[in-house]
Length: 113
Length: 113
Image (cartoon, rainbow over all chains, first blue to last red; front, side, top):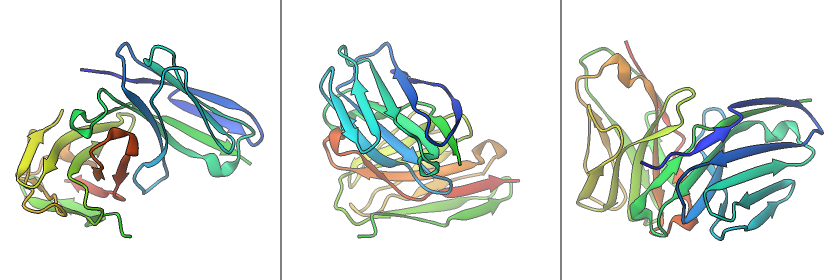
């Protein structure tokens, strides 16, 4: 069984601060995805990274896939209250959905005005 | 597009009762999934399907059953509800390639009393 560990589990910061969320595993993944979930809704895909060392940017969010494809990080610059939510990482062992995604337990982020 | 539609949004069941959680998608995805989400526990896979007529167990299938008679629909059946099945249930669908990500429904919050 592949496991993904996210840290920290909870994070409460002030508007304008920077933060990094980590997603680690002892297993190699073919791809790594990040989702954001808001209260009462299902998770929504933010990004997929597939190449070791890959960096993707989505406005103030920067996602990195580790060189060995076992870990990933999400960095938010100048956090805003609208960034509040549960951030989930998910790893795919293969390129096709038949392998299913393994989800981390999530990081609950609160950005205070 | 509606994406993934789940009904009902909320439900309270008494111990021993049965119910069916409905899930429908209009994206012509072959792959569909049922997850449960408990506080601090992330998403756990209950059942999944790779196409009409094909289903398989996930991590936590006990107490649940599924069927997939059409590409669009993937209902989840709870028989003899137990308090341990109190959770939020999410249905998701995906393209065959993991990189496209999962599309989730908005969830069903189930309480068993």
